[in-house]
Length: 112
Image (cartoon, rainbow, N blue to C red; front, side, top):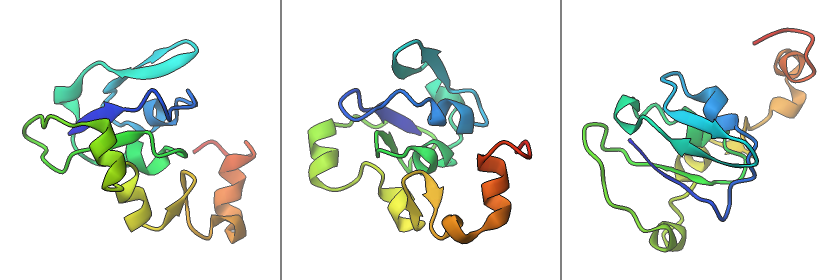
């Protein structure tokens, strides 16, 4: 379940808001998004995958909230840990710079 949006790391790109299939986040102009509906989180980790700055922590416990300490998560390398484990770099799958089909989505020629 989503547990943390780091206000220190977040660059307000809203990628997590867009990636979330359950509409867990609310956009806040010029500020990090708010976890508005945490109980709707399906623990799919898409928000963490798409975050280019490792500002999110999704707990692997889907059915319950877990108290988290941001400094401890940073010390343990857990912010963005799922993204790294999956081989994503900067919010994109590794190797997509050479994948022309993925680049069509990035430059707006094709809607995702």
